[in-house]
Length: 242
Image 1 (cartoon, rainbow, N blue to C red):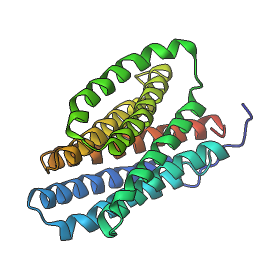
Image 2 (image 1 turned 120 degrees about the horizontal axis):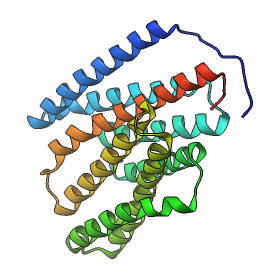
Image 3 (image 1 turned 135 degrees about the horizontal axis):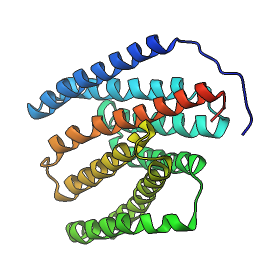
Image 4 (image 1 turned 45 degrees about the horizontal axis):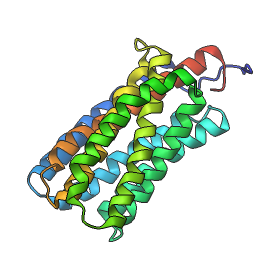
């Protein structure tokens, strides 16, 4: 891998302080959003959610700025699409199109994880438990969906979601679970669970899953963000464009 001079625009102690403030802000957003959702206060949550997700989208762009082109744009693009999905849901009348944004986001996450850990035949074994969980979920949820077109859309979305989680597992396990980069694993797993809950809630036509979703979703973004911080710190120490 080509070597580049290490660049430090912000000293490590300062960066740690910034990261600490960002995690604290995420906790504050989490409390505000959860309380708003619990009390049905959409006038607060509809602004707090895009603000929270937008903060992490900006962090993704900043953190990945020194990465190689493909890695930078897949990571930044994925978070930008996640933000656009939440923006559509909360601040526009076109929330139904958010599924496209999230599906494209997961596709970019897949590309990102493949760049970090390319495909190996042995990794197929790690796909099996994800596939089993997804098939079980479909067997549980599809009977609630009478429209064939929506059922096919759910199956296609779940394929993308499952591949995303599989590639995250491969990235985390081959990178070493003791590494802070392993935060990818809980982040991707929580994202997978969140989307399953959202789809289940839509199929049931209920709000039963909303609170559970908002317990998991902020944690998913925070974990993914922390995994990128670790990757950026490794790149600075080694002088490599990751």
